[in-house]
Image (cartoon, rainbow, N blue to C red):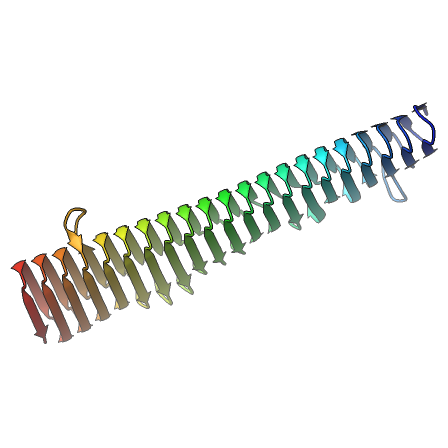
Length: 470
């Protein structure tokens, strides 16, 4: 049974209907226009416009639709608002509502069945666009002024997208081209930018609260989960991932922070957290079974972790607390079961650690105090290297330099005091160095070349110096 109910308010309203289904249109105001064309079976349309110069255009069904079971509801209150809907296929459903002036909505569903699009706007100069493929669903909510939200699911199957914007001048974009998957964006504040490009069947989520934050996420693969959280101002976060069975999470709280993740292959877990101002964290990974975690608390810290062409079981963990700290850890062309751990607590600390080649390598460096520097390098098989400097109440201007090349080498160094210097070099096999310094102005330089050396040195006192070369 066909039914059309048309209610006209003030003059200069225009309605053009060619329908084979139920149609309800109610317009009140001046220069409202509703242009409706419906074809197919069991289509339902309800349009209500209240205000002046609103424009609504709906097309449902076309050649090739099976059941034409589309449902459209468009409601506009205010002035100079526009709403567009175009549907083809079956089981489509669209709901659009606008409250305010100069808002714009657009929905295109033309690639298949069971599509759902829900869009809501309240405010001024907001824009929401949704383009869907087969068996997809999207939800968009905007409250504020001059917000822009875009969802594209034109070649997706069973994909779901959510967008929420509350504030002014925010931009959110979601593009999905995977068989399935979920993408979610939440923006609160002013002039935030968020973009998700997903070819993964996992979860992609972005959250922004503040001003002028930027978030970019490009993910593909299977079972991928990526989360980006920004709270503050002028923060930047990017993820480029094409792995599988990976979990990526980035959190920034403060101002002027930058976090980057680029990884491929799979079974990675990457976590970055920054609290403070002008911190930078960068991860470049292309390994299997890698765990990377970086935490920064303070100002102007820099953390970088790179795992390239490495096998499985590699772990990098870095923690910084204080000001102007810098940590770099690299595992390149390594084998299995490698670990790097770096911790810093103080001011102007610097740690660099490298592992190139071999397997069963371990490296750990801990700094507590002021102006400390640790540099460690390993290459070979079954190497171990540890370094520790100072305590909270007794640490200043310490330096440690260590280098290993060979098989089954071990270096352990501990410094506690003021102005200590340690340098250790090992080339060969089965070498072992252990060093402990406690006091003031101590200095130690050790070089070992050959096979099966063993050295243990303990210094306690003031102004001691030891140089050993074997």
